[in-house]
Length: 510
Image (cartoon, rainbow, N blue to C red; front, top):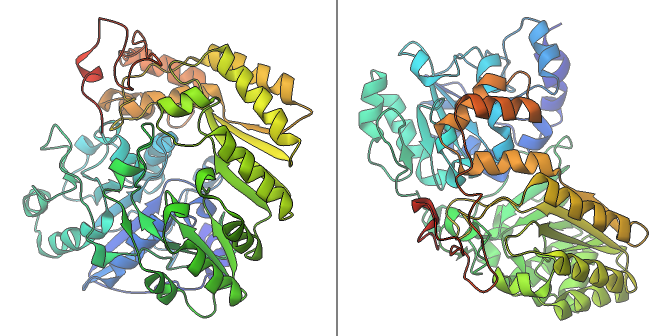
């Protein structure tokens, strides 16, 4: 039997909100990861709806199979979800990409869809390949060997432009002519540098789910965007630059997007506890018996009223972000969270009967030393006396468009040594969830790399491993131009003690 009938059709049958449309212009909207991950992406769902709202355009979804090797052995073409047609049989093959580590998955998705991954090997007989999503706003350059169009910024502003060009263009060059120079449009065949980002006007917001499914990572949850952008000055975060100026939606705007049949709602935003209507919206929904999900809440704005609303919405573990292991490093990052804020949150969670507190943080920050790790360990022990603590620890990955762009990656050995110390000293105190230091290194390479990093990924996309990455990067001539830079707690992010500072390392404040 076909892969679509045995694997995709059961998922399709459980969806609510699926769009079925036939039109002259066919768009495949692919997500280079499994179905459950893609369907948890609000941006992916918004673009799906917007393309289908365009006259003369029909958009169907496609996802990378869970076991790509097994799928390829069947000899079948990658199908779309809605009708099972060949995903590559379209005028536009668009990919929405959230994570740098999906770079090899992008190439694999193009391959299994029957498209030649390299842009220079395609012609007018092939579908146009467009790539957008958070990855492209972070760093589009590793994608330039593969994409005909790279979308940078808010997709809401781009979809109508692309749709009109698809309806009118008679060739690939004609299509380029129609969209060249528009905000957010990066054409690797014509442009050397990324353009001004696209920023959606307030009237196109809020974003909200199109499809609800039990098979998403956020099972049966309807997502709605409370705010876009962020008002906070945290120096390590892309939210302020990637998503443009902070735009809050009105409470009733959010409530009006939520269908009566919805049982679970997820509020999306970079700083939800700064959103002025979080309590009102949360209370209104929980009074209707709706379960409530939120991203992490800033510890400095937590109070008992907010915690009570979240608990009424079904939240069992309180999640906050420390983002640095010590007070001095949080100040350096302009995080604005203190030890007292985190302690207060632990007390509130205990008093209201939450099962525990999860604290997200990064290690491997430039000025970090053993004393910072000691502070993390001792403070975690103090928190654990108040309520159960889980630590989600990720290595710090410097990103473009932040002051930390030219900070050195701390190094796999350094991070692993600190991780082992934390695990040893907190193994009976807190639940620890760590991100691999080796894959964080790969992420850091992709996050700041150019087309050569994309070509390294092309060499290994069928057999990806840390060893394969090292070999491929060596073969394409990649070198770490930032490793000699030395951040200091006494200098603002983006300034270094090393006198031999590359041009990339200067003047990169937001």
